[in-house]
Amino acid sequence: MNSAHAMNDATQAARQADRAQPLLQVRGLGKLYGPQKGCQGVDFTLYPGEVLGIVGESGSGKSTLLSLLSGRCPPDAGVIDYRRRDGRWLDVYSASEAERRTLLRTEWAFVEQNPRDGLRMSVSAGANIGERLMAQGVRNYQALRAAGLDWLAQVEIDPQRIDDLPRTFSGGMQQRLQIARNLVSGPRLVFMDEPTGGLDVSVQARLLDLMRGLVRELDLAVVLVTHDLAVARLLADRLMVMRRSQVVEAGLTDQILDDPQHPYSQLLVSSVLQP
Amino acid sequence: MNAATQPRPRRDDAYNFAYLDEQTKRMIRRGLLKAVAIPGYQVPFGGREMPLPYGWGTGGMQLTAAILGADDVLKVIDQSADDTTNAVSIRRFFARTAGVATTEQTAQASIIQTRHRIPETPLTADQIMVFQVPNPDPLRFIEPLESETRTLHALKDYGVMHVKLYEDIATFGHIATAYAYPVTVAGRYVMDPSPIPKFDNPKLHMSPALMLFGAGREKRLYAVPPYTQVSSLDFEDHPFAPQRWEQHCAICGSEDTFLDELIVDDQGTQSFVCSDTDYCAQRVAQGRDGQ
Image 1 (tube, rainbow over the protein chains, first blue to last red):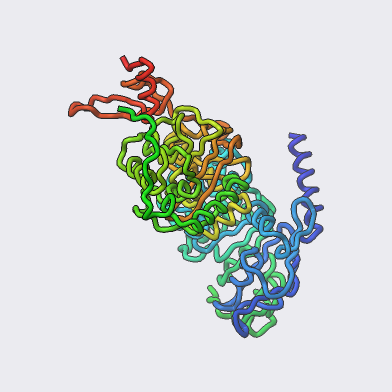
Image 2: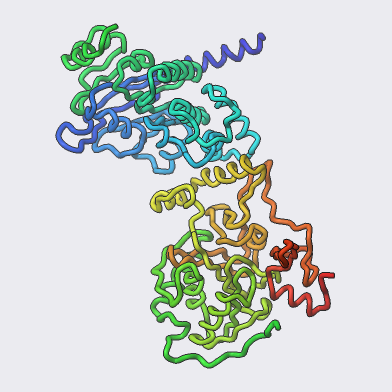
């Protein structure tokens, strides 16, 4: 019991030390497809364990920003610096493609809006969860199997379904499987694009509850794109409000939702039906 | 019945030597040099139309045409048999267009074009194997985009290869992939060894003979140079294991060769025979039988 406590303390101390330094620094980031189409002039700093929500209307540049951040699409301007687990800083877009891909399958994770884009639909749930581990060189079938069973349990899917194809899963289960598949490699930074989109309200609530637990437990930093302010309020520590390719307001979630300053934020917040 | 080496026939002068024009053969040889220099790497080449359909060995034939010399002795096998339609046709094609000697005996041949098998008789350093390949890219089954598979090869990003093996074990309890079993060549490129059974995979490892692979439809060629390390992909707790048979060959009694199963009557009686007809005939000539 004591040793467990001591280790817990040690982990806590390590987390505290890690939290003192930023994880991601973004300066002047932009990519425009046309005037005010895309995103421009984005600056922010993300710390370990922090959840940043990006909200805004359709076409405001949220998803463009997310693909720039996650290394999927080179920006026209700006720099993204990421602090790796070994403490060295990496400029994401001046790094080699090999480094960027390694990052994407080890320290980063991407949860797609549509689980069909993020899962391999033709292979079993267990293979989906094991893929990142295999890409990292795990060559022990029993270990992969154990990880699969463990993660299915963690995302509240019956472990007996480990050999079933994802297409036999419901939408909510597919989304949870996608989360398991991404988190199995122990990432530090997770990008999520509308993770609860297309799910019914009760499934949404369960998924949000699960995500909130996992984010806290694993001390994940998350960049979350959503148009749903309720999701943002539940998960995000900080918010950035985007409109016509620009960030119009940024700050603590409660602050923005309870006391919006920019006229567009005010419009956005007031458009939500109050119970 | 096993014919010995056929002496050099008269070449049909209406064709250029070995059918292809000299420029094309030069282009393929340049590709082959690159392939040998980078073991397992798929080199694109400008594949030509051959006078038979894709899927019948056009890739292998173009490589054979490019490396064939007037003094070579050619052996062609299909499913390891010398007397099947495809093998007979290709052998006759090169006898006519190049006027080379042909043989059915592995030991006599200097070039062996094959589909599906590596001969049972051990190869030597003065022989070249030419494989006919349908799908050169082992990543194709999981990644349809060519640009993406090339990037995965370039970055040595081969995690997805094990997804297939994992799926096999999860479904069947063992690695059920029995042919075109992926291998790592010289510790770098993952390669599809063409549809040879995994029984033949160990023969690729440190082979004294040069192995050339040609895919006509996909227009790719690749190579395993002599004495190159070739290892089959597997898991620590499910190691690679070639096929084994309880039976022995009904004709020559061999117990360590690749056997074909034959159904010999309407009652479903099974009989097993060597798939390598030349090897089997040699053993019979040495006085062995299956009784």
